[in-house]
Length: 611
Image 1 (tube, rainbow, N blue to C red):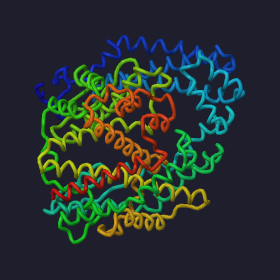
Image 2: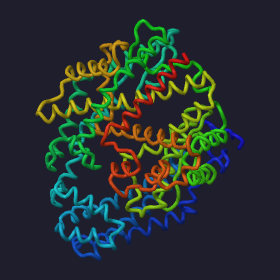
Image 3: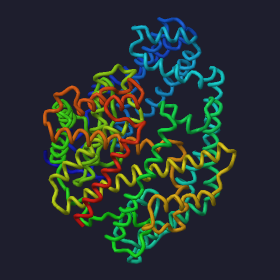
Image 4: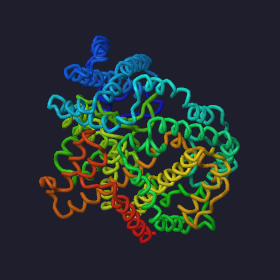
């Protein structure tokens, strides 16, 4: 495969079709898309006729089937439009299609709003009969979950009031975004050469990874100092968000916001607390890593602005390769997942699933977008470096999870949860890492090991630190207190001292970092990064250990790899913890997190031996 001309200044039409995704697999023509949109209106009218009659078996079944048919078609309508817009934001026709698709989506959401509350108002014995009726086999888990949530669902009128109130109660998060994105101005800073440069949220991590220590320090001081200037306002916006979530939790009969947030995916509170406890028991390896970083960088003091500096000066250039070579590397790395997985993987790489190269107007970054009944799509902006190879493996992990789920499950059970979403993608990253390490020279190994250690630092340790901070602030709200900026700053500095150990000099400016984290406006979300990464580590370790002993393990139905494939096929057919446990990973115990942190220790030891 020849690499075509590509880049931010290259028109999309210049890039050959073989390097682009095939949106025509969704709808062959614009006319087919228009026809699909037109057909929805009658279906929505039919669905609305079901309102008030869901106690009748045939009406309930019709409503659920209509809802799924509408949802599946809208998924395709929206994907067809958005994929074209994301591949070229200058495409005015795609912009128009996306706007119309969003309007259709809003109409659909309004049309289905009665279903859940009306079902939960049905007598318990009637709902139980429906759940056990073979005619509702596609919906048995959905009905089971509604029954679980019954005591937390209010009457239809009360639910309507709560829904209407969300616009008003969301002001804390809205004000935070407006302040940070529009009103907050960061000063011009100097690099080590005395040149003026800018600092912003968009450039911050890039600056923090620079070899220029003066640039890093000035970026850190300027960014944190700016947030510090708004600390009281930001404490107020965060207080507002926390109080809003506590209000909804109490109204729905939960003890607090933590219980309410975890209940959405049926996650027990002791899992959350246990995750924090397990990480606290394993902080010494992180302290050792930070001390090693200080030693290798030869700094008298290691400051927060030094944490992101790579230990390998050559970095990403060590793995420069073409896209076809990257595909071959990923293909070889994922062979432990068995022949069927590799067969579908190759299909994804060659049959129009992937939009490979950057072009003018293309959305930055990468994602996977599953389209039920068609196939997944992957957006890339491929560059010849390891990060892009890892991104390819990561996004195809999402894609094959979506593919196997949609091939096995009915539409109502096909969508896996956010709790499970990053497991398959990160499992692929781990398998790629181990393959790359096995074929790397010393310099490449240093780079790869540093990449892994940073991933654990930022995905397990740092996210659990965030999760612990969330528990602290929401406990204050539950106790009827407001969040005071000074208290939050003191807590944050002490938290960093505990997590990173004595090798890190916790500058006073670090105390403002809490105020810039947008995840805190979506309470109790970040812990899922740590659990997902831990589950992926446990899966990959077990699969690789098995593969070393038996290259044909995928033919054994009881093998670790087939349990993992069962996880991929399960979609959303059960609760996340049950699906994972059936596949061999029990996140209600410390074991998966312990496996991940033990791997951190092993890789840290390997790195020390190489340096």
